[in-house]
Length: 132
Image (cartoon, rainbow, N blue to C red; front, top):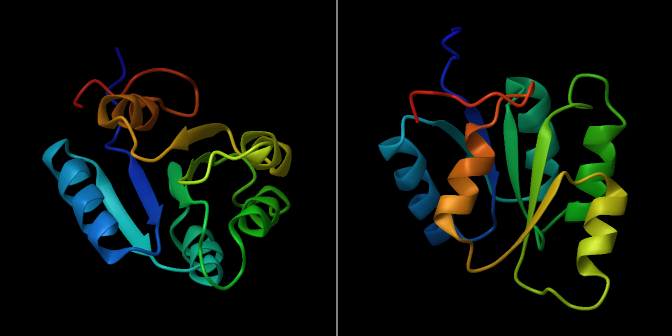
């Protein structure tokens, strides 16, 4: 059995309180976290650190969240990163737009933390990080 490294998650969320809560949650479960608060920084940070998973707030200031997803998918360095789009809207067509842009998963706020951790545990190959 291959032991996988702890995943690296980029939390791109405009609310500092939410970023703080997610940082704590992931830290408790041994997940490394980087964070940012706007769309432009999300693209820059993703290119810099090459995370395993990006948790992307659906309402980022600056470059809008759908444009962030498209830009990451159009860039070879981040083309295959798992993107979890998190929306507080859930309006008609919201999930379809997020998935059409290239998001792998779509969650509504408030996020089920067990579901979120399960998504983070998956490696790119689909195997599970056993230490989580």
